[in-house]
Image 1 (cartoon, rainbow, N blue to C red):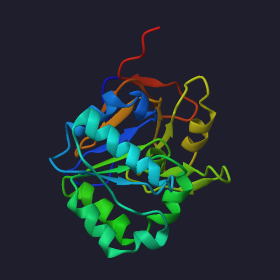
Image 2 (cartoon, one colour; image 1 turned 120 degrees about the horizontal axis):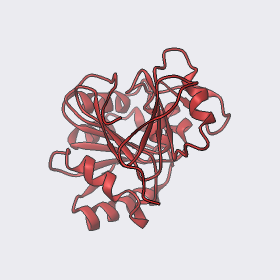
Image 3 (tube, rainbow, N blue to C red; image 1 turned 90 degrees about the vertical axis):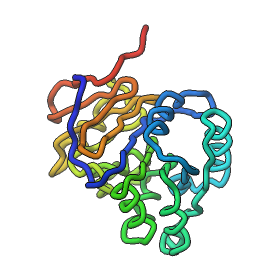
Length: 231
């Protein structure tokens, strides 16, 4: 498989799903170059909501500045009350891209829906901005996501309303992705290994960076986008 077309939220911006990996060890450099190439000039916004970590944003800012020459603005949304603050929505609106840091999926799904920051994030994609989610944040952008606290399935943010995403994916251990595929309304399952990424264009056409595993049926076989690593 070389191409994949996905239903997505409407808009003229790109959506980037990163499977995971440590940016401090260079594991996400290729994926980061891909979404940065589609990002207009200006500082990249960073949302630490999933992790709740102040240090994460600082380390990410150092990495993006030193390796990619881009500045970062950390938008301080740690709790739902932060997502209700108009000032944070204004900060998000002012940056050309918003990077959702990894952490715990539940934290994002408890914090963003029904808030001005959540609305500003949707508007960012609609008006030509880039929205990036890594690891747990990437999973939260699908139709449903797996709770890391209860292991039950939760409604996702549905930026890809017909897809589910399994980050840090190993095709030899695919049970969790296949379980999510059984949820009503899901048509595509996406397995993203660490270091891989899927970039979704405004028209829904998806491009892979590294191997991306796609399922169209919970009991079916995987199709592979992108290049497999050399052994």
